[in-house]
Length: 404
Image (tube, rainbow, N blue to C red; front, side):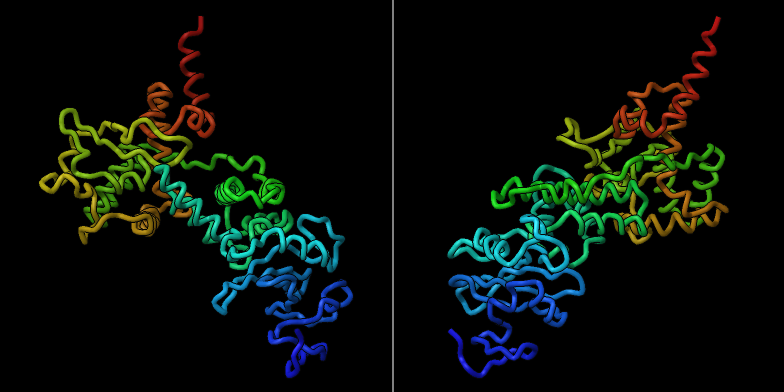
């Protein structure tokens, strides 16, 4: 019902008790909508009890919004699609006035708050919980998405995202990340959106992210830095000169080839003295549930003698000089400084180069690929995919030794 006292500041129309409400004719056609000024605040019409359809005028195509009353004097809002301001409506991602009303009604159920309409950020939250329940690194996998996800896209309903905006976001990541890094980010977002669709029957199409988040081709081009043994020894020696605890971390990484995240999780109880072995916690990379939780990695007696084992079994084996556990940020900054000190390019030579070098060292020493994969907590497929050139060099020497 219209009441006096509220006049739309742009059109001069009389409004109801909501100062951001307009008449349906103000939103029915793109001509009428494009007369409205660009604004961050949507304008609304009431389409049923407790449900309003809103329109936000943007620099580009406007956005259709649904607003749901919560019964307590408040409301929640969700974006449900783009308006047909500049492109014809397709009934899926671009909606005209009637289609926007229909979608809002389909998404809304009386007595059901708008929170139940899953937004992209909420889908990521659910995906993080799902990964954690399955023993995976939920926080790690979703954080790499959240770092790069625009706030506006995160607030958008999963059912309303478009292939075009997802593709634009994906392509923009190339300004900050290598193609393989982009693929890691978008793979996690696709998994989150698929999980949301699996559990919400109102999400009837996955085309938006199947098209907009296609993996970049030929992204897995190995840029692995392989260091010769003398360079590795030089890095180890310089790391001990910098700080004893950091040196122990670097030497452990060089000898085991383990990832930094795994090394940080090793406890005193994970050390075996006869023969010297570290039982390294399995990583949370890869698919499925791993049968074992630790990977045995042979180490030298010299490295074993440097560990402080007179501590509680559950204590972290390697700690910083302040006795706290290592984190990714700690060793990353320290290793950059170490690389510069050894006259190496810190952008190329990272701690991960020690892992690459360990794998290649074992391959060249004739260790079977399956054993190399097992001791480095990876797969034969990944070894062959990532280190194929070094495998070919090794195979060549073996075959030549057997020539007639």
